[in-house]
Each structure stands twice: as structure tokens, then as C-alpha cells.
Image 1: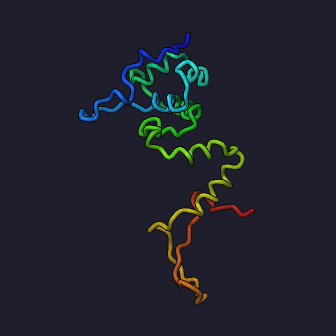
Image 2 (image 1 turned 45 degrees about the vertical axis):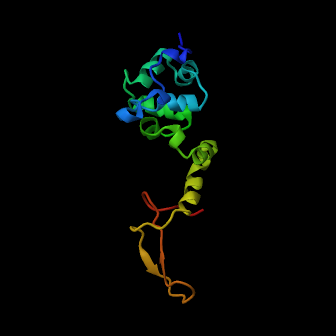
Length: 151
């Protein structure tokens, strides 16, 4: 039986006393509420009960890797965000856009997004030798095994 009544789930983020340095054990409840879901609805999405969601939200039951992966996918966020970041502090625009990118196109989208990254200190500097404009520029190295594939 699922627990759709959210009134017995302990303190919400608004109830936490900032002066005490207290923070929730995780941000699962905040992400669930941000998505407009009840505990019962989220439970159905991940194949459990509202009571289990309540235990996970309160920290009475630990959020292991299995739970984090299932819940993050259902809530359209990253596993780390459930543990470390309130949705009010996340840049949700990019997360919402990414969630709408079909899985088959994500590798291409990632390559395109990487092109917009600012140069980092570990990127090698090379001379272009053309004489036009700056003679030095950063070259982004492909990450991962074997580098980027060409179409």
C-alpha cells in the first residue's frame, strides 16, 4: 500500500533551522516535490511502496547505488544531486533539456556541448603558424579511449 500522505515524513527543507547547520540526510524529498510527485507516485515509478520512499527520504533507510540510479532516473536528475543538491540550487534548464535528448543522440549532444567549454589549464597550447590573429590557442583533447570518432 502506498503512502500518499506527505504529512508524516519529518521536516521539509523549509523546517530545517539554518542556524543549527542541520540539513536533510538527502534531497530526495525536495526533488520529488520539485517534480510535483507524491510518495506513492514516485514509488510506483521505481517499483516500491510509499512507505519505503518515506524511509529513504528521512534517512532511516540508506540510499544505495541501486536506489540512487532508479530514483535519479525517475526524477530526471543525477544521482549526486539527490545526495548533495537541492533542486532550488540546481541549474534545471540544462537538466530539463538533457532529459529530453533521446538516449541515441546523447553522445552527439555531449560532443557539441564540449565545444562550448572554456579552455582549461590542462589543455595543451599549440602554435597555429598562420600569422592571422593570435599565434597560440588551446586545443581540446578528446576524452575517453581512442579519442572522438569522426562522422
